[in-house]
Length: 444
Image 1 (spheres, helix red, strand yellow):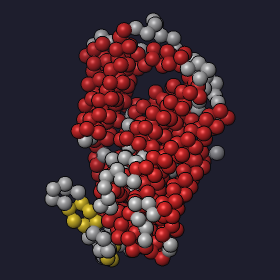
Image 2 (image 1 turned 30 degrees about the horizontal axis):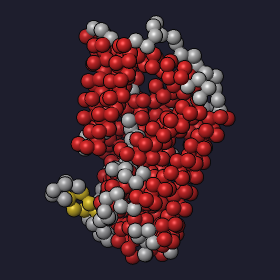
Image 3 (image 1 turned 90 degrees about the vertical axis):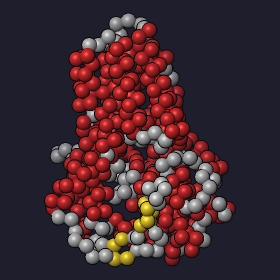
């Protein structure tokens, strides 16, 4: 039996297919304007027109690959530096000490551990739209799961999956809801009551499925290697510094609009401090850090390759055509039907546009006037976007974070797809019901 293609092969295949599409799909473009104050480029509504341009050559296709990797350089640096940081913490023994103590405390309470884990990652998705940051934490999460008797699918669902759920149903995700509301000229954080109610319902059902799957797919527990000594002062300090670093980065994101580079600096500093506390030599520190970065190489390259797809479609002048073709026909349906189809179209569009913040900027200027025309409130238009586009991150192979965590967990994409499509479809159904309710109640 032939082995299913890995993430690298899949993404190269999608990049090649995208290039072929630039010769098959009619070219077109929306007019765009750039805000001189914010520097944000926006699409001008009702400005789509067919254009005649030269499709990318095969050499352009090859150039798109390094361009895609370079375009995600800040995220790749974050993955490398967090990977190195965690590797140093692991070598100090603090991680093993902490996990051993945690596993011991949770003995017989494995389900509680899953609930806590899913709650934390859902909260991270709700507040800061966390996804990519899960990549570097995946090796530790898998080790923690094995020590509790949970397989890779359970841990990826509880961690990465929960961040997707939180990001999608969030009332305040700064990279989805707030951007979309700003593009729709809505008051930021408006309409949060309905979003919070739907989030609570979705989260409870999400947890129920998680616990059901985990209970029926237990594996033999991996016994944690005993540490040389009980939880010492050094390990305690390192683990507290790890928690403090996460707290500082979250605060920086929310308060000071930090990006990946500021987060990278925090974790790089943590790695150095941990090495000093463990009394590592300079050579040992650097070698350990580099070893940790090597562990994340495949995941980092996957993140860059995913970015190359958008570059090929944009350079080929067919990205706007795809948007126009997906959303143009919606004006022929009732408001409720249009809202649901808008959500589905967003999920489909997320395949070639893996950045959901970029998708908001690309589509909302087109969809807001369309929503006004068909009698769909702008708040409901934003609901359709956030439920469809963000929840699709559970499935689309063009999402670099998804493919990276699957690569680290050694889970083939086809097996993940077989596992994830049911809960994802169920969450989209909840989103559809929320849209119907919003239309029926005149949600504003």
